[in-house]
Image 1 (cartoon, rainbow, N blue to C red):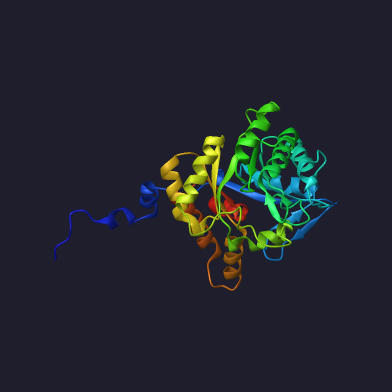
Image 2: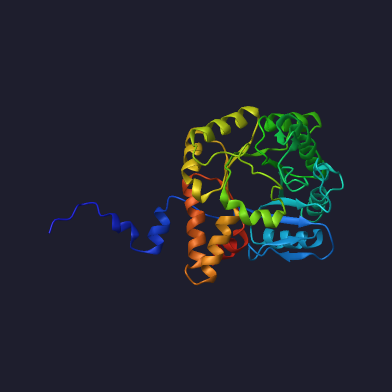
Length: 324
């Protein structure tokens, strides 16, 4: 029987050979762990739709961050849950707001940890939208002023990177100008550049207590049918001064991750969102999937598509599995 001189299986025979020729790596220093911080003392409230994830008071947040950093995860992404919400989302840019206090506590206790802050009003507004409402519509330009104040307050508290997720037009330029004007010229912006209006965000709304009171976010988040538009969004954010660009969600949008990486070659983050996490957790709890294998395979797929860093609620578990 005829065989070709080159046999593909030769380089698959042993684990050592497979490792030697592997094309994509997955390591803990590529992971970013999202955390939810709230007011109160000794708060550790499990999020029902996200088993293993919690709303944490600041002292417990610091303890969690120390554990995460000890596993080799270099960065956390913070979401704040304020004690009081209002129409203007004023808690977002309060110098004594929940995120501002959390950042200061983390940098004091663990200065080596990279602290990234989500810059968006949705957790802070009483109506749950990502900006200021005017005549029943999210007013883009007024919202930019609030987002800039928010980003500057985070930098003043010690945030290493600010990450605007609101999807308002022009927000990267506004935030860059605001940061530079206050002397934070070296604070990078990680822009949620291609953030889609996705059904995969459901569990996050419970975690961050940020469901819209009316309507939805499709007038500012992207239409999932569009990929050329995603490229345009990313290019605009880069022109405005974004240092890192992001695609969100991750697994349903691997084609977008790949395309944007190929077209820009800029540092690229992918956000494996709450729905991705919860569906894998639910299937594993039923015994339908091997959680370790399916999580690591999913994260590898995101890396293979072109993501340089992955924001994932599985980060802590993945870090332990990668050490085994």
